Length: 300
Length: 264
Image 1 (cartoon, chains in turn brown, blue):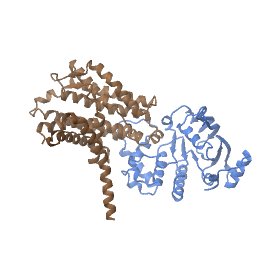
Image 2 (cartoon, helix red, strand yellow; image 1 turned 180 degrees about the vertical axis):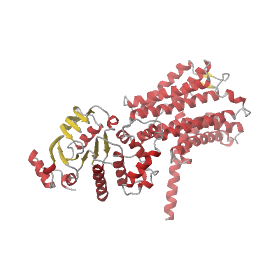
Image 3 (cartoon, chains in turn purple, blue; image 1 turned 90 degrees about the vertical axis):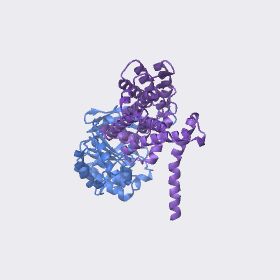
Image 4 (tube, chains in turn red, cyan; image 1 turned 120 degrees about the vertical axis):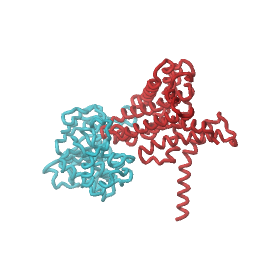
């Protein structure tokens, strides 16, 4: 079984990946823009926050800069697509590759340790809580605020215009919506959220590493798809809740798999387990509905 | 007033598939006119409408909408002046959004969109009023997803959306062609009602000569990217499909070989 620390640890990273899933929901679902920039903007957020914190900046200010950096990365991807007509998927891969160099430049080396620095978490350790509960509390607050803000945004005039852009661009243009600008804004906000996730991840794990972005897109997608299978995303707020639920479920599933001794899995099997879980999350809803269809046919 | 002067547009220039869609197309539509546009396949009807809407930019010529030269403006910058209903009933609305959200998108057509709530309480009266004029019971289903509606219902809502805010011209692109005959008749009747009540200036492309003569105040026929004839007032009264064909042949010395123009 899971120890208490492993359980809280899974929820903690689950909440961070919930932010990533928000971003992926925005790009993949709302804008119908398959964006792989996140594999670069996650470590970008981590790198910016880490370097600024070491430089003595206020950790929240540093985290804010990480969000801006993520937004800039997203805007680059979107502009490559909108202005230069590069296929969206390819545009995002180009930015992602470029960010690898950018991240190395920002940090000046492959990784930066934050263990002794003051982070956004530091003041919260004064609370009368166990060591492993502190990040969970803070991240619940951050995710909740992000969810409310995103939900309000989606219901706003601009947010509705963004949803129309992804759903029916021709109709959106006919309604006077600048679809190109909406794509830039949406992909920027999406990567801003991922930059935030990277910054918080670095601060809770105590380091930023240039390779920490590998597979973020897969984990985010797994969270999104898994969450949608559990919480039917019939409205914006349900879709956002699905992101968080999916991300926490995913991290718990990983924690259980790694802790179940009888499976004999080890930490290096993480990516394999991820791939298997994502495949299951994509395939299972289809299998379930085809079984249901067969059953109802047999009855009839 | 809309005036298009000497519009020229060639698709695939310099390729084997080079296709001159507009070849010196000129047309002026006055305030309050309801013009029906006919022409065989490839005559340039849809291209002309797309050029007016901004979906395609012309190679040369000039488009002026209410004293503003829009020739080089993209679609979204013209949308405040140009309202549009598409042929495909699925194209004019967003199926993933609710009826009220679709209407809320349309009520801000061509205006700045901010961060205030999109579906505002003050819109509700206008939304329910205009929806109940359709007699489809949609005013009780404001929160329903657009995707739950039938093609005819969606086209009716598209029409409402296009007329929710004032425009200089309403473009109707064979908007009844994809519907079954009964629904098509309903949507066409609704179209003439809205255009008359709101005194809209409208341009309706149709595939049916009969329809082109039944509604509107003026009929224009396109052929090979140009206007071949333009009739209104007394000349147009009592005209029948065979008269139109006669006119066409006299003007061009051509045989009409497109069956679909004769049918329907």
